[in-house]
Amino acid sequence: KKLVITTANADYLPHLNLGTQLVSFCEDGRWGAEDWGQWPQWLFDGQEHFAYILRKPSSTEMAKHPLRRLWWNMKEDHFTGTSSTAGLLLPDIAQEFYEIRCALMKEVQDCATLNSHDWGKLCDSASKMRSCTAALKFTPQEFLQVMLTVSAAQRYCLTTRAIIDKIKKWDRMPMLDKAHPVDNTILGCITDRIPIIYELFEKGVPVWYVRPASHLPKDINI
Image (tube, rainbow, N blue to C red; front, side, top):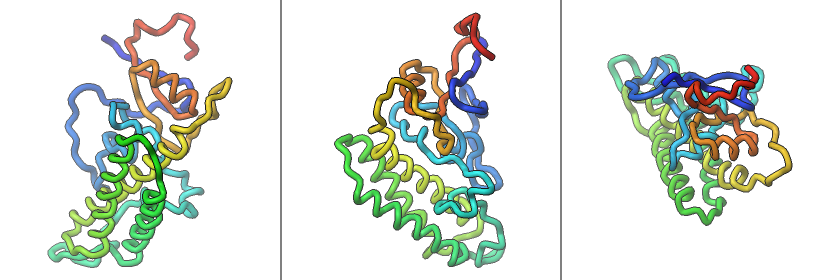
């Protein structure tokens, strides 16, 4: 069947993969369109927080953004070693990651939820965030491993932030007579499930609907 993707509240169409995909990391250590910290993903049960991951800020916003390191790309001159020796991320940059981790961990410790699934996800993500940011500061590795650790640290910091926001903000979003304004600071998600479409649309979460072309109404605005 021919499938189409539409949206009622987003201003662009994301790259969309269907079926089995070969996932490999790119030159920046990320996974391209399959990287949940960089690009809208299909919404699957257990991954509801992916929709709330922060989107990369504009170039004008980036300089003053408190989490700007989470979209930063590591280069060889940010490495204390050489092509043949182990080294660390430059100390000042590693410290920035460590400070982001500390701020997020304080929010994790202050976070309260009766949803055991969300709490488990939060603890798991926070644990991986702690491990990655500690490795950047204290564990010498080869350049490629440091770059991959940077991208993992970014991914888990963003994930931890998203789960906290899901618990404290998005799950408590009040119901109004009309949809909340769309929040373009988050990634949103892709789905083929109509209830999810309505839930996220009403919250103001960017959402894309995938369906067979035969399901398009004849009076749809394109």
